[in-house]
Image (cartoon, rainbow, N blue to C red; front, side, top):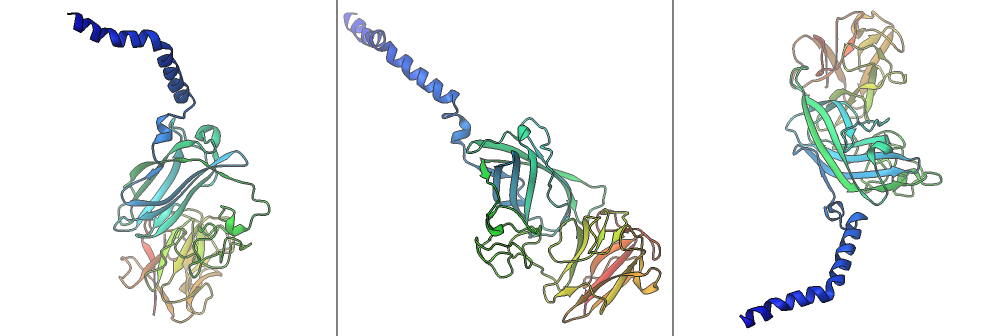
Length: 356
């Protein structure tokens, strides 16, 4: 009994003698936790998880010197077929839209192609981005397979958790190192110097010149002799523009009133908008126009597409375009018509084109 009492007395004597040490340790741990040094966000690794079929190759959360927030991603569409993006949004941890003034492209997204997906001009009071601190943002998009009915829609929700960086003042910084897509083609700054990129080095003062390789909305490059699609992003040849993806008015590509572009590209040739090959459409005016079959000479403003080496041939069909063709757009009738893309809510008359 005496031995038992002596064994239990030792811890008691230690606590009564060094109680102040334990209090100091607890206070220190509490202070570190209070100031976030031991918070779970400091321990957890950065991550980007959108969807298994949207591979996140790069991600960045940033606070600008103007006080706005930026969310920047580089995503690859690994769905087995092309998809149509209906809309995007960046959401705060409280579930509120960040109200970004610059949003990622919508419309068709070809399979295996990489896009720079950027939300800019976002409300940082809602985002809560603090330089060099961890932050989290939810990414929400709705889409459908390109061949699915227009009424079909699926939603993807993912999140980006990362340390916030800063976007410093752009004055005096070369365009190829200013963290900005200066020419709006989807490629941002120097990207390794692949052939065809906008920038030759980070010190290149001008970000412009040619389609970007390995980046941008269509970073993987064309894979077919002729590919056409409608999107609010086009780094290739814009044949004409539309006010919407469906039931739209149209304009010539040099006008700036509409954001959606009937965009074509080729893996084997260089495309132009001159009329040496094909005049698939006519417009009633340069902008805010109705369209018609170009072979009918119904209107007076031609919409054309040509190839330097080959010859582009276009025709109209109410049946699906052939496997050797690409669908440029659809129209509501052959004269005095509205236009639409080929997948969102297409009209019956399809403009089918190919290189011969």
